[in-house]
Image (cartoon, rainbow, N blue to C red; front, side):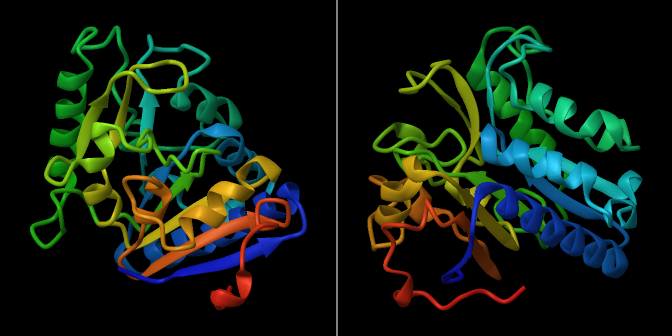
Length: 260
């Protein structure tokens, strides 16, 4: 796994704009080399802020939206269209305003979907969808995502992998149902660390003073069970995209700055 690199911006708005520009470059590069690109989206204020910035970025139209596969790192297991679902928020922030191929937008199942209120069955269904999209050479039974984005919670959770809960200890399955999450709603679906680590690049988004302790803990050698963000690494690159407030308690001298 790659060593984390830091990119620290003055504030969350600049962070979102710079991350959006970086994402456009990665998508265009992947499409140029392979014909398509694969990105895993994250929810929360930073993930949605990035999508909103992407929607207004001058280079947005450089992306061939019809050749972009979108996946999600986790989802709140709520009915379709619920405003708290990550996919609902992503559609409002960007997805409904760009010409995506609906067949390439891979939303996680809703609680009123084909699996009913069985989050574990829904997770298995999403794992099967990932496996069907994976090439024979891809790792862990998921596609080799070009970029997988994760928001970092104040408790160091990423996706819906919370400290000490069973999901963060999973070593075989790629998607799991999460029960008893410490923040509402308690039932969720999440990629696991093996699926996350199959990505070429993992980007962790952290902005705000409430993320400072989490970032410091995750980047100070903490174990992934106690600090799930510490276990989120990409195969070729791991980027922590931060604002100054989130980096305020971090010994940045220990980590070389990332190049653009």
